[in-house]
Image (cartoon, rainbow, N blue to C red; front, side, top):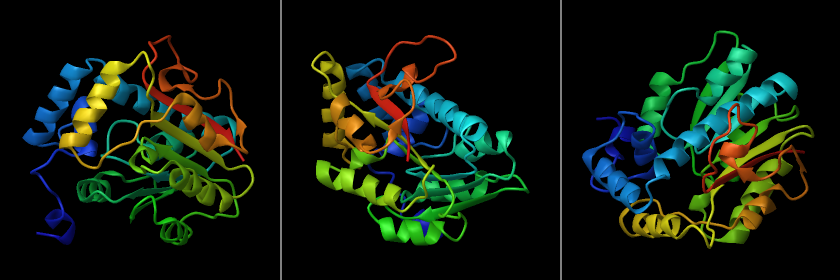
Length: 260
């Protein structure tokens, strides 16, 4: 058993594996499927969030590669490999794109090294680090990415695991401050809303039984992550409403793309 494999805990449900279950993946365990089904009972639309967030990732990366000239991507909180991963979308547009994935989940790392293989022209790397380890991430990412050139910072569904508001904003600011002008922030975040009591119930269940705990924020609080950046249209909205190819219902996962 490798060091990474020895860190995998199958006794408690884990968010990356449940997300994988909801999106039709097979990299999960009975404990994850049981928790995922219970959360879906509390909030039947939760599976749509995972799919909407993945589709948002694809649209955002494709736009940045096609229209903003972005050739470098720093994807923190990668999650388990799925369809249309960041490097696949970016390198389908520009084969020489460079992508660095960052996660601290051992199952994610084990699968990433086996499955997230890029084009011969581009480069793909993987870092074992926590979002809070900003200096570690930037130092290691600089071995693959040229931080003096624009980078897309991808933070999809990951700052929800930083409970303290000011700490979470500070982490995002530090990362963006280290990136060149022309860089972009791509961020999505679960929201709380008075009309979404079922979402709150699902989150409460998760925080009681799963790991790691997550924090909801209001749409206005999510928009704060983009302070000082030029928001691309349509702003911070439900991720299903960010430049969709077809009209789809809103979900309680808000997202945006901002330019430095």
